[in-house]
Length: 114
Length: 114
Image (cartoon, rainbow over all chains, first blue to last red; front, top):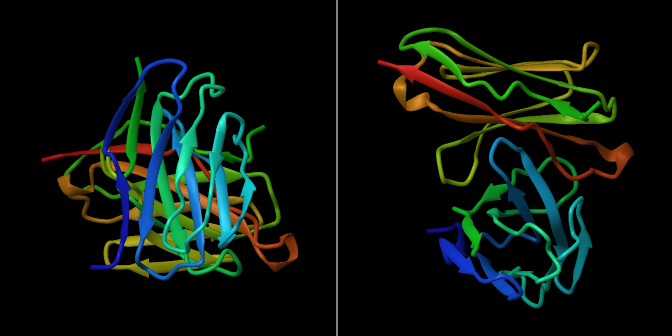
């Protein structure tokens, strides 16, 4: 089955620790995205990548980092510099970022900072 | 003024009712308009999309876009308890704006009671 997988589903972190969220897709999509969702909020774009080895900051990139070494994978690292990291993180992918291309979403990772 | 405004609800209706969900926006460059459905603790899934102004129907769902008023709507006919979810509007620019990334509304929570 084609789709997007995110792991882990739930993640707990102590303050001051970096954590990495995994996102893998087997849809052969070029573009991948990371969003953050807080209660009662829409999705806010953290980073996106249109091609391997290239990525751009979204609206709320501070305290986050990404890499795109493979087409299928777009991991997100939440660093200790992120002031309020507790949130629901969603990964998405699309064929390209131009014209209209449907973004498919993964199931999400819920990160809680203890 | 936020770029995309959406009433967070919750909107409670009885089974069988017609539901109207709406978003307003301020950016006249938006040309692609989408509605996503998100069940609790899940990733969003695309329900409908339209390009520019007009209507689009898919089963019980109808999407309307009025670019002159900067207003989009999603109508759900014969609503079912399984329609209970959060509905997110999303929109993006076209070629002239470099196919900008998606901007989401905050989502409207819909509750359909049996």
